[in-house]
Length: 544
Image (cartoon, rainbow, N blue to C red):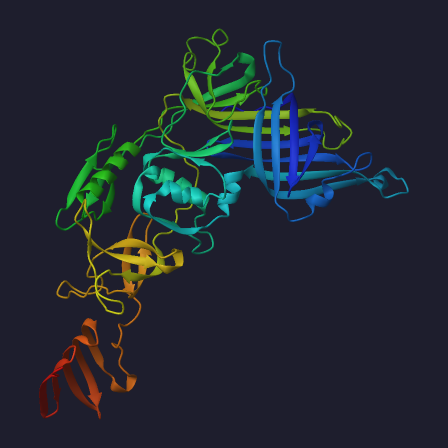
């Protein structure tokens, strides 16, 4: 990595700080400290500036000390350019994350009698809107029979999230956002990055439009910036490690166990990364295998740049550039290639001890350094920031849906998928507007000897994944099933109602066991009672 040196640089800066609904403009020459880090998924930065409190009103003070939300609108452009160049500003709009009143310069410091404040030095830390707002956002939400994009848009804090990406726009039976489960859990911002990473995409911030997108494609095009020799102190090329393992997808489904190897170049023998799972539907296993195949993208070279000046053109993630012909040896590896900027880091420090310097001016003089990382324009590897994976499943209560039978009957209904013939329940989630999700028809806690489907309106605990659901627990007893404690009994009820079903009870009467079997159909009743020394069988038919 080349050494990043300090240079004297003139920067033209505009700064507007908005607190609540009130905006305050700070002349760029009064900014004395600036730090910016630009990444493909967004930016973060900090700045410090003087405000004249003596000759002009410090309109920021009363706003600054409140807890109202604050935003920053900042532009940075080269202060000095050659006759052929046009200074194009980098424009950033972010949300303040930290703020401080660092210093109040009073007349007392000048050994005068009054205590008037002459200048105040403020500092702000800020980041892109999505990182800040989404980073504090933990919605629990559900959308059935629709695209995940619709659910994301409805919970995006009013921030535009563009995507035409198939994993997000395809219609799904279930879409779930997990909410806040415990301190340190994934935020909405983490969720978006996890979605991108797990589905072979990326969260991309457009520095020109100030918008976000979920996509699997990088920008491609001709170079928009030409770097002359005097633009850089130095550069170096880095070649990331190549993965040497062979991926294998493992389907453990007992009726169709299968292993599929994914081809990767330059692997070492007998070195594997296995992904086990259970996929009863073959199409699901094929879909996962295809996705994993597409994710195999080995990285090529990175180029690290140490800049000697602030570029006249906008130089931000996604910018295409080349090494200007005639300024570099044609025998170097970089000449003739087009590169894409991945990240940029800027540090600029002015004369903090002199608030009068460049007062009310738009430009300032700084001790300046700038470094960047770039990749080939043909690079397909998708960079992803660190993130916290969301916690699935989410456990919510539901009520089983059945369209069979009348109200109050403990009927059940099995729904069959038209495309896969898979059998399932429908469960309404009262917390989330009674939306009905689909859950597989499975034995759950019993063996295959028993067929006791969940009945209409039964309370169940549902485990919700991003795109799937499963009943994991039954939460109440059926009507009339629970027995009084003094009986110390057990009860099995089968049927629709107490007037149309079969009951098997084992209870204790006077400390002795008693077995009762009873079948009721309207006014007809057949019963069998077995206890010590006695067996009573009755068949009663009431004539109307």
